[in-house]
Length: 407
Ligand SMILES: [Zn+2]
Image (cartoon, rainbow, N blue to C red; front, side):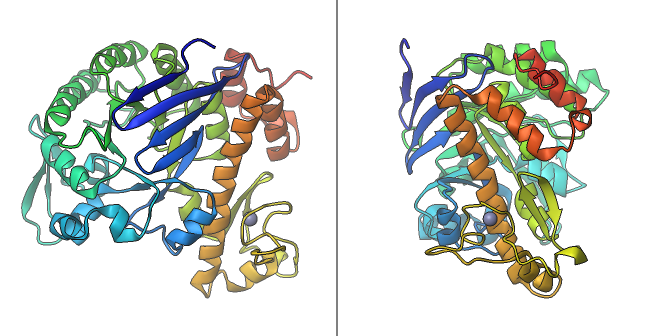
């Protein structure tokens, strides 16, 4: 392979392998708090903790890069406390990497009264109702204080299904202008990596235009944003495929807000490397275990007498029976699920491990040049018959050379 390494001040990207059929890649990404392997899933630790599990337990899942929400950290403990303690790594006792979002999406999605202007996102404080303004400069200042290894630009996010083309164009162009303001405001380019976010809704030409503008700013990593907002999966795939086709080989590509196992596998085939989503941890709190056979709701009475592990063969500390394993049974989770938070904690650990392991298996299959076969096995595990395979996945994979329906 020709040149396969690209370094910027706080990040090194090394392309390890490329699938010869699909657009999938395996890479090593070295960040200020250590190396991580791509493709990867990043669990979301909303309030600097992954609801119910400790940093040690998160580390045990193999996680070396998790997500924190700037909006939540900025409100509480707030910038002064973060400054005093020396950032989010120290606050949560986490010596591995952290990625923070800009805070903008959280505001727009959580606060009904948020209003976006050229200056920034205006909203009313959820604490005392006072008017506040999140600007690109303020978002970067907060993220600089948090000290996260990857920081995200403030972008103007519009749901992809919005029919308002003019507003979509305004949001895309504004996101480019806000990236310039973020770059100018960024105090720590030698220790924190600012990623741009490609916008443009479902309009492929607008996405292409945005890619061109964003690439000209030469950020160390690139995100594809605004997706996972209720658009059809086929549209989602078209956007990802269109963007990855134009992106440089030697930079990480992060698709924001994606977490269903099928979406991850298909998105890797389309050339994406990094993903995050609250779904695996949120669904754990409803008694759901993510497995190779799909999602199991362990609240179901049929598990009351099931003394098998949450998922047979799973290597997570809950399912494992050997040294360091807890040998948790489905019956135990079922027994506790509506009474004790312990069941949610156990399922959170299992689900996070599942997601990280899925990406580890995908990576290994790319390196060993058997990713198409892995995809077939993965879908065979999820569905009883090929007739149940979702059309969008079949179509998207066919477009990158994998025909799920043949063979
Ligand atoms: Zn498990």
